[in-house]
Structures are given as structure tokens and as C-alpha cells.
Length: 81
Image (cartoon, rainbow, N blue to C red; front, side, top):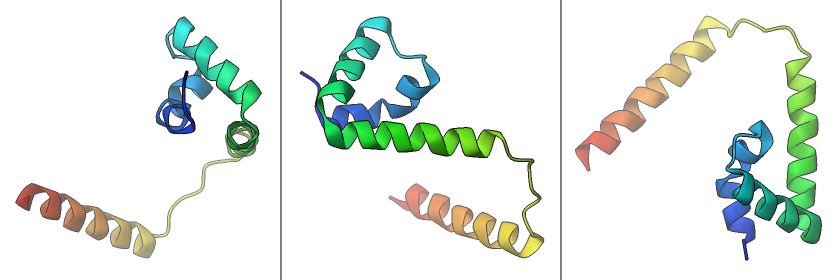
């Protein structure tokens, strides 16, 4: 029996319909039986539909620079451990 944690770990493959058919069936069963996971899946699907319908927007240079610096710091921190 799958847990909520299992569903979250496989959420991308479930939503992209790339999960193994047997796993997908188990995930679907869990979603049907678990109100909390049903809300997560439903909300995520709706969010994806909204964003897929939007035109791409450029990221302001200042934000892109801050994000890239943060990623570089995180990667450097991970490489130290």
C-alpha cells in the first residue's frame, strides 16, 4: 500500500503519465482514497493548466543574477560536504 510520501515522490511521473502502469494504478488508487493527496493532485493539475496557457515571460536580469548566485552558493556548499 502506497503512502502519501510515496505519492509525492512520484508526483511528476504520475502527472506526466510516465509512471510504470502498475505504479500508476497504485498511485491512482491512493489518490482516490486519500482526500489530502486528491487535493494535491487536483491543485497541481489546475496550476499546470494555468501556466501552460501563459506566454513565456522574460526574467528580469537582477532576479536572474540573484537566482544564479544562490544556485552557485548551494552547489559550492554541496561540493564541500
